[in-house]
Image (tube, rainbow, N blue to C red; front, side, top):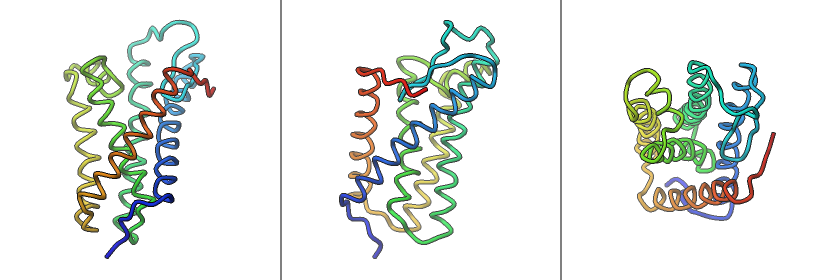
Length: 182
């Protein structure tokens, strides 16, 4: 039987996965914006141009989609590692966090268009087309790994609680403390 126990090392891997995923995601937005010539501020859960907004619609779309692409690639590399190697619950948190982050962003589209939704709207596909495709792809990866290693519902439930809690702490920290990284 594979190790599915939730212990303090697993919690630490969750902390690392959430921090890494969010910072890499926001750094990608920041780097793309800077490469396109916009001076940008990066926080824990967001980036914003220093001088107001980005007037070029295609640049906004490129900046918006760049980070979800990196997050999906993170999920894909983790998926391929787990499919090709033996089970590692600590590595699994990086796949689960990538999925959870994009799922949360998808739900936030009901309030305000998020990364994939902005691109979906830019392409004339409606608000939820690209977010649904992104979440479905990441969910498929989780499903395949779960089937391969026969992961239990209890393990997924505790992983969801862990990643949800850690993500909420990160998001709320950004909202209240406005931590500027770059």
